[in-house]
Length: 379
Ligand code: UD1
Image (cartoon, rainbow, N blue to C red; front, side, top):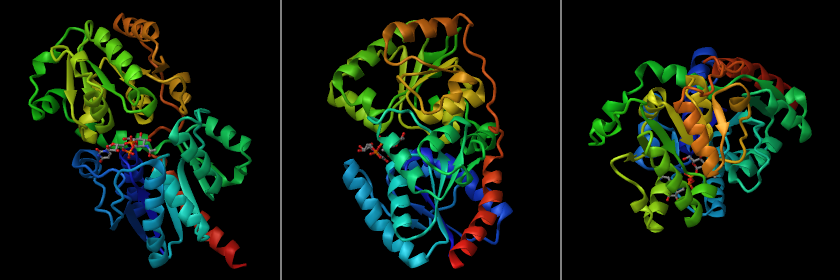
């Protein structure tokens, strides 16, 4: 049967695109079926990224949509099971740490179908984060685990996962940065497309890019109000472009916090395509974010990143890259911004195997691994 490749939510798309290309180029004998769970379904959250990343139209769309964690996870499982029954895949490949990742891995393993997890072993050691639960559980049931940084090997070893199952392949996220970089859309183009006058962000120090969507930052009125207040202070020295996740926009409106945003200093944009985001990051003086992906992309692009979280599952971006953890502490955020604007931002270097060829290494490893695994199962 084919290899079923699963995507569900926005951060999955840039990880799976290079995998599909590498499999087609290096192991064309291996048929592939692309399944979209439909966890993200808006044009801005899904379709635009498919176009930018040149992802093929999914062979199957489960159209699960939004819901509570239990409902969403259960619905993906219920709808994915008959797909596995119909196609009898040789393995199921999942990426990242979203609810769709765990749900599909769980369906596969219970049917004795081997699971491949790409971006395995990352740990924030914060179990209040829904993604941490998805990461731990997916890794426990995966047969082959591909990692992006060496700390992941230690995390997996600590959880009892045999080292022969783990392969350090590098970061597929950076494959997409390399792929898209030359076609990144300029900030002025992006603003004009959103009917915003680029003059708003013209400033001698440039502009800052903001994204926020973690439940711990945006789901409670007090935390969100405090963070928007600090961003307002940052905006007095550096104009900001704030790309709003639907969850964040919804909460700002629901909690009545729109007044905290001064449109003369902070531009609000709807979710952007991949090439727009690359352009925004590349042209930014600094990035303020709670995203996992942006921590890695800014390290690859050499742009200073302030992560509005207490911890990170991607420590290499702090140790070697441009990332600094500032939490939600006002003084820490303002101090770090001041340093960067004074030219004292972290320079960083490119981590090992973040070279644009991670997917190639994964494809080259996967075929012999699968053959061996089939031989083992037959004997
Ligand atoms: C999910 C991932 C998170 C990832 C993020 C990137 C999990 C547990 N979380 O969080 O790791 O960083 O995606 O975006 O899987 N919504 C829309 N349109 C859409 C999709 C969602 O409006 O196309 C809104 C809905 O109101 C929905 C809310 O966003 O209830 C949250 O969506 P959901 O998929 O549950 O989680 P994210 O917060 O996007």
